[in-house]
Image 1: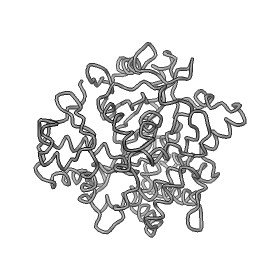
Image 2: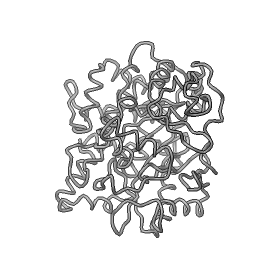
Image 3: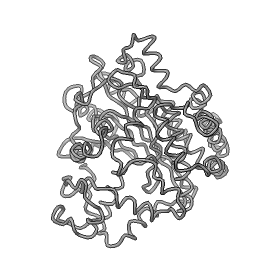
Image 4: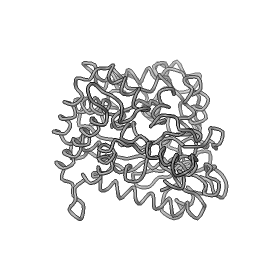
Amino acid sequence: MSAPPSGAGTPITDRRQLIEYMEAGGKPRAQWRAGTEHEKFGFLHASLRPIPYEGAAGVRRLLEGLAARFGWQPVLENGKPIALARDNASITLEPGGQLELSGAPLATVHETAAETDEHLAEVKAVAEPMGIGFLGMGHTPTWRREDFDWMPKGRYAIMRSYMPKKGSLGLDMMLRTCTVQTNVDFADEADMVKKFRVSLALQPVATALYANSPFVEGVDTGFVSRRSHVWTDTDPDRCGMLPFVFEPGFGFERYVDWLLDVPMYFAYRNGKYLDLSGKSFRDFMAGRLHNDVGDIARLTDWSDHITTAFPEVRLKRFLEMRGSDCGPRDLLVALPALWMGVLYDQSALDAAWDMVKDWTIAEHDALRAAVPRLGLKTAFRNTTVQALAQHMVAIAEAGLRARRQLDTRGRDETMYLDPLRRIADSGVTLAEEKAARVAREFNGKAEALYEAYAY
C-alpha cells in the first residue's frame, strides 16, 4: 500500500470542526484501551554502527523480511518501504532508521506484554541472521549525527531543514533519540482535562523513573536523561509543559487554539509533502496558502498537523504520555501499567490529582528543567522526586489492583510495575547503572553498551 493519503478529507470551513475532531475521541469506560509505542536503535554487530536504509544489512531489507515472514503489509513512499501495517498495529521508521512499533489499542497490560514479546521475537528472527541487533536507550551512547543514513520520508526532509532554525538539538531529537510512549483514552472533556493535568504534572516523575540516556558520543554528559534535555532545545513553538493546561477553563477549544499557533511543517498532496514550514494553519484555513498548496485545508491536514506538536503530553483523539526514555523489555511493558494504573481507575486518578493539584506553574517548570540532569535526586519542596515516584507507583498499583484484570495464571497487572518499584525504591536509574558499568567494567568504553543491553 502507499503512504496514507492526506488531502482527500472534509474541507475545513469553521474552527468548530477542529474542536469537534478532538471531542470525537471520547469513549465510554468499557471501550478504553492503551496503545504503546517504542523506538529502538538498530546496529551492526560487526561494527557497532547504525544500520543504513539500503544494503544487505539495511532497514529496507529488514522491513521486507518482516513482511515476507510475518504477514506485515508494506507501506510505500515513492516506491520504497517506509513502514509496515498489520491488524491495528504498525512498524514505522524514525528519521535515523530507529525502528518503532506502534502497538494496537489493547484492553490490558497482559495483552501489551504479549504484543511486545511477539514484536521483539519477530524482529530478532529477521535481524539476527543479517548481523543486526537492537538497543533500547533514550539517546544513542556513541554515534554522531553524520553517522546516520536519513530515511527516505518526505516529511523528514522538511523537518531536517527547518529544525536548525528553531533550536540547536532538533536534529539530535530526530536522529539520536528513542522513546517509549503510552496512549490513553478519555470519556469526555472533563475527564480529558483531569487526565491531561495529572499526567502532565507527573510526566517529569516518569522521566526520572525511565532515565536511560547519560552518554553522547561516548562521553558521560552528567544527565540521566539526555533525551529529555534534547527536547528543551528543539523548538519552543511546539514543545514543553503547556502551562495553559492548568488554567481555569482549559478544554478542547483552548488546546485547538494553541495548535493553531504552532507553525506548520507540511501539507500532503498527490503523493508529495509540500514544504509549508513556519506557515500558519490559520492562514491555510482562510485560503491564504492556495498558491503553496493549490487546495483548501482539510481535516486530514489537521490530523497531520496535530502530529507535528511535541509537548510532554500530546492531545490527539487520545492522550500521549511522551516523557520516557526507551529501555529494556520490562520497562516497555511497565509504562502502560504505570499510566493505566494512575488514569483508568477513578480512585487512583483522584489520588493522583490530590498529589499534584496545588503544584504551581513555576514548580512544573522547575521539575521539567531539573529532572533530565538529576533524575530521582531532584529536590521538590521538602522531599525528592524519588519520593514522588514511590507515591506515583503506589497509586498505579492500587489502580491496577482495582481493575482486576487477570492473566491465565490468575495474576493481575500489578506485576508489571516491579521494575519501576525497584528503581523508585533504590533511587538508582538505568542511566546511573549504565554509567557505573561503563566506568568500572567496560574501561570507559560506552560502545560496550550495544551488546550488553541488546534486545
